[in-house]
Length: 147
Image (cartoon, rainbow, N blue to C red):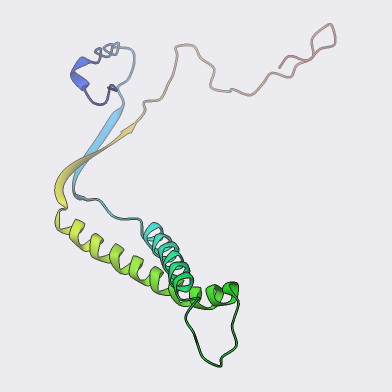
């Protein structure tokens, strides 16, 4: 279990000292919707793959049918031609399944109130600190420059 699962078990943060300024926080409440949604790409690609496999099975089962005087086409040619239809119809069925599942899951959506907290950190100053943080490039007596 992580610390975010059980906030009561976390050690208390040390109290800020009087010399340290406290950060300013601004909070606002928003109503949000939490729901699950299907990944449409996965459904479409999955449907296309199933359509190709169905085409492969149908062509394999119908290869031995007597077609009369027609020239026999090779297995690869038939699979290639009919897979255009099988893949397209499979992708369409996968997309329709994803839309239907999305509508069903949208009904189960939960509306919650979320609180957004924006914290602006306090300026960090130390007594006697020089504000200029540029590197000191003065030459040293031995010829090196200080960085």
